Image 1: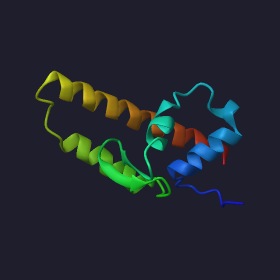
Image 2: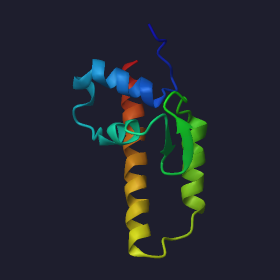
Image 3: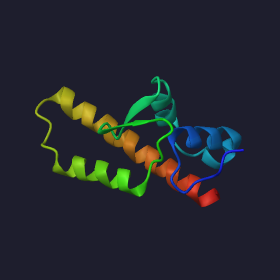
Image 4: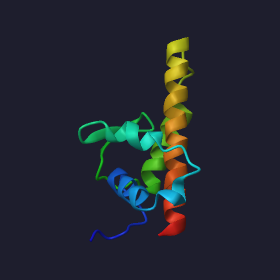
Length: 104
């Protein structure tokens, strides 16, 4: 049995959500599917490359927030849409982590 952690990895979140789907039914979980479809790595918030087993710590979340706040404005519509999609995924993963931490 895996130890439940305060800084869950993507794999931890997916496993816990699959065991407790009723606790996440009101959240958009498509971000988990999106990140999980990659081999073993994904870009958290579209910014930091981590593995599916890397704990998503407060420090990592802050790094992504800092990168996002220091970024230049998108220069065209495609970039604008891409940034918006990554920001939405990042918001969703934070909501999922918050919910996870409420129940562990």
